[in-house]
Image 1 (tube, rainbow, N blue to C red):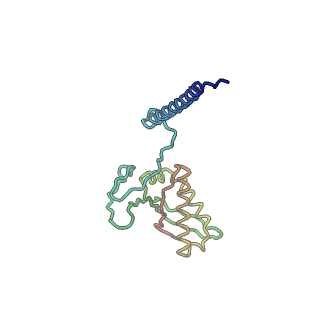
Image 2 (cartoon, helix red, strand yellow):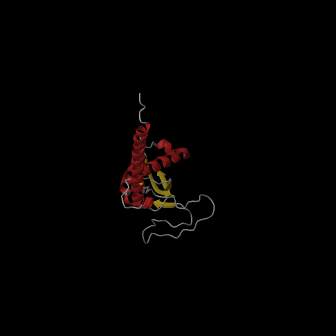
Image 3 (cartoon, rainbow, N blue to C red):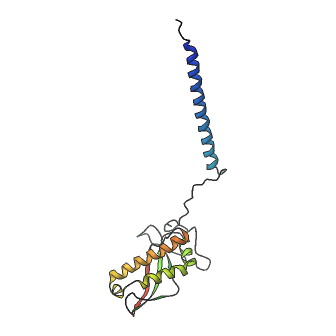
Length: 187
């Protein structure tokens, strides 16, 4: 009996390994090249850019400042939050009947944000839809709830949520931190 030629088997095994290694190297080079082209902007990426309003630190300029004529020079103190607070005041008061009673509530509101000016622009742009949501919340509020501080605080939270829900449905992001009563009358 003659021994089989092992050198031929080694050549076949070595050439297969060489082919597999070459294929892996080509795939890696192609993937790296594609990544480099996407990172360099030659190929558009389908990854969605985070374009949500950013928090604005005290003393920093707002990348989306108020429109001309509305700009106000703000001087911030060193204490409290590290972020500045901007306010949006609704021009007209809100008047609504109250749930389960003949009572009416009339109030003026303002809302605050620590985010950039887009939130204020969106509030102005979608004020009609926001007003409708606020009136819906007011009409669903029982008169007894408005007699206590806790009830008024709960209403503020519900109004904040209503504004944020409306902004989220319209723009994809809320951004309102608080709602404040400028005037508050229950009749």
